Every structure is written in structure tokens, then in C-alpha cells.
Amino acid sequence: MKKIGFLSFGHWTDSPHSQTRSAADTLLQSIDLAVAAEELGADGAYFRVHHFARQLASPFPLLAAIGAKTERIEIGTGVIDMRYENPMYMAEDAGAADLIAGGRLQLGISRGSPEQVIDGWRHFGYGPGEGETDADMARMHAELFLKMLEGGGFAEPHPRPMFPNPPGLLRLEPHAPGLRDRIWWGAGSNGTAAWAAQQGMNLMSSTLKFDEGGAPFHVQQADQIRAFRKAWTEAGWKHEPRVSVSRSIFALTTDLDRMYFGGDGKSTDQVGFIDGPNKAIFGRSYAAEPDVLVEQLAGDEAIAEADTLLLTVPNQLGVEFNVHVLENILTHVAPALGWR
Image 1 (cartoon, one colour):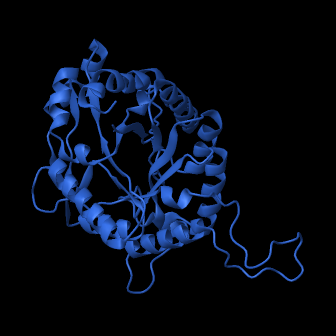
Image 2 (tube, rainbow, N blue to C red; image 1 turned 90 degrees about the horizontal axis):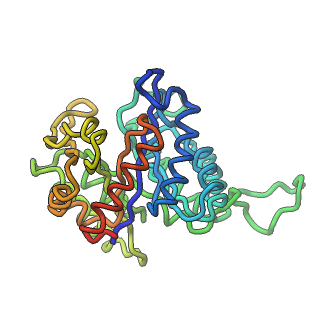
């Protein structure tokens, strides 16, 4: 059995071919899609965060709105770039959104991917210290964020406060119990997956990672998951971690499906470069008739290792079509693979 959710990048463009022509279209349709996904029986609604782009960028208002309009579905991010974040303010926003959702937030965070502008985090007022990298800065922000979510007091109360204080040092409010255990790290390498395990975060692995050995993408990703679980055990955490992988999967059941995605049936892994000289491998897409998809996905080692599958959706095709995409997987593919 697997949890199955969707992952939306929240693109919009002022084009007659797009169903999302503005930020408002994307935000409102994201809420509608999450509500519809819950009604279908999907397990999660996740959203990518990119700054300086015509995509979703400020996740907490959206997560809170979805939390208020749904009852069961997990609500998360995949991922928030911690280079841009004030960990203290983020802990307050996350706590509020989680309380509105009744404890259903599953927040994916990470060092982030290449952005639309050069060193965009500097425009947000952040920069690495001397001798440090932006990745170091992201991890320091993440560690402080995790500490704030633990809910311990740390701030000296004012001797003459405006309102009465509880005894002792004060913590950030509102505090969301249990949210600390629902933070995921988007890891791009085996090493960062192990670091996430040491910090007690769940693992979120996307459709790309650094190429570490030249094996097919799904094999390298499965190795990454095993490295994460090994490090988790060695760290001595008492609860079981969760692991998600993302995939572009389309069951071709209508002529419209075939028109949009029939060409993806010949997709293969791709190798390229991110952040300059770093060689990366990008996983293939899956698009085929349901019976063929079942056979193909049964051989994906990383999906087999994960407990959660996030399906990337073409959000610019509108809510109705994306509901159809999700329903195809939940109805025609997941039961045959034992995921349902």
C-alpha cells in the first residue's frame, strides 16, 4: 500500500492555450484540485515553491486555505527553498497553517534548485557567512526551523509585558504539536539524504538527483533511499521515517490523453548539469496504456522502496483534466500494483 498524492508546480502564463493565465487562477484552481483529489480518495496535495517565477511562491496562505476546505488529505510542499526563509517567521506560519488543517501539514524543505535570478536569496536579505556556501546557509536555516518547531522556550519574557505570560522562557506561537515529525528534506544526493536522516527529517526525492555512479535513475534513487534508511537507523530515531518519490505518470485512456502525452511513451532518463559542473540525472516520464504502465512501474526500484508517490500534474490543463489524470492512476494502475 502506498500513499498517492499530486505535486503541482503551479505554472501560469497569459496564453490562450493555458487554463491558468494569472496567479489568481493558479491559486484558486490549486484549492479546487486539492478538494477534488480528496473526494477521489487521493492522499496528498503538494505544491512546488519557486521565487521570481510565474509559479507558486508563498505556500502558507494556500496551504491554510486548503486546510480549511478539506478534512482528510495531507497538504504539503515539495519543496520550500530554505535559502530564502526566515526560520522564525516560517515556524509561526507553518504552525498556524497546520492548526487550521488539523495537523495535516507535510512540509518538504531543501537547499533548493537553481532559480530564475542570480543569488535570489540575497534580495530577501540572506547570504552565507564567510567561508560558507548557500547550501550551508540553507541547512543552518533548516536546523533553526526544526528547533523552533520543537516548541521549547528560549526567549526571556519582558518584566512588564503587555499581556500575562506563562512561567519560564517563551516559545514562538502558535505551536503545532507533531509538526516537527512531518518535515521532509528534498535530497539531491546520497550524502544529503543521510544528513536528513541524522536531523530526523523524512526523505523527499524528486525526478532528478546528482549522478552518482551512472546507473539508471530509478536504481540510483533506490540506493539513495537505502542510504537514508541506514543513516536513520544509525541515528537512533525511534519512529519510522517516511519516503516519497515524484514521477510523471500518465495512463492513456482517451484520445485527449494520447494527444497530450502519447509522445512521452518513448521517454528515457536524461543526463545534464545543474549548478555549473554538477552532473545530474533526470528520471524518465511514464505514459502508456494502463496495462503497459503497470508492467513498467513494477520495475521501478525507487517506487518500490518508497511509501509515498507524488504524481506531477500539468496544472495549466485545468482542474477537470487533472482530476481525470489522478483518477486514471487511482482506478486503472494503483490497484493492479497493490498500491490500493
